[in-house]
Image 1 (tube, rainbow, N blue to C red):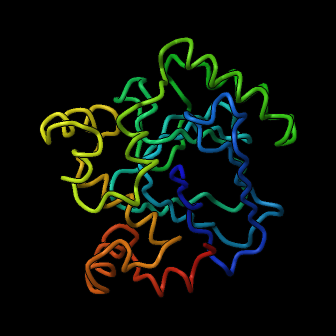
Image 2 (cartoon, rainbow, N blue to C red):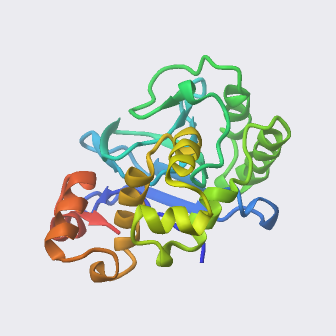
Length: 247
């Protein structure tokens, strides 16, 4: 089964924020995990703080209120709290780890609040889809993914695909190297280039993501190790995270 990261943290006490995600068409299934939308249904009385979790994915983000604000985003190994204000509307494309081949210098790991200044057609796309309902945005987002493919900005990454489809067999970096039929040095070089993460950091992120769907003893040596790793990445113990956020 392919890797499926969970949605980022939305505080359970906030009722006027809506998150939606849909799978891509089958032709893009090895590249895109999902298309997503995050928006306020009504203006909030206080600023909303979005708890973004590392998942090793790269996202193309579009601000649908201020359409010149867009970007390529990815977190590394620690969660970020993003203040989105009292009213917002974002749409995005989430690529699987290792798929994005574009300019790594363009990837940001923080709040995106300034106009996009790169060479990708992000502002044009954002302006086109801003007037459409989410379901009508999807074909245009799929067309953009096809354009990325044509321009060699994305590709199916055979190394990360092997890792993501066989995560249950991976408990150590040595397992990862054996599964991908690479030496540790080759694996380090390929993953650093394609994901920005070392094999060890990638495994830490993937394990925490898996822990939302599996029993922690399937992934960690003991409860102490699990809680320590989970807190390092999310900023919370597992119990406090589940109590605070929709999962």
